[in-house]
Image 1: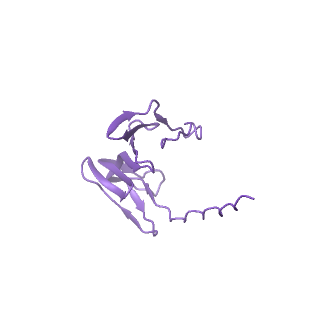
Image 2: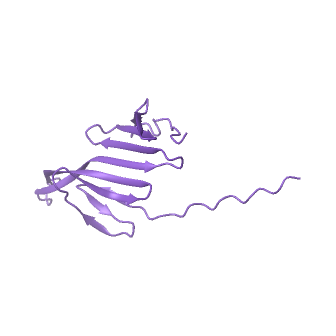
Length: 143
């Protein structure tokens, strides 16, 4: 008879969630909360590890909040927004995958893959829809 199959791998560990919202406010992996006003059109490293980098471009903006009820006073906020996001990941087969997202074109992202230092754009763009979940067909990039 054939040898017994190895046991299934253990599930990956669960990690605390983090998020960025508003102008921007952050919630860190340990539940810490803070706000950040980035420099004028400055790109900041949001995450950096061996095979994954996430960078964001902050753009300053002044806006007015409040006034939605009788006791809500208007206030002027000198904040900033994340307008572009850049993700670079290294795959198991040594491909470099780059995704660039711009808030000015909110439903699309540019995908670039580099293999042996030759860049090429994927033949389709990534399309995101909040009305049609999973509107984009999943694709395996690590081929």
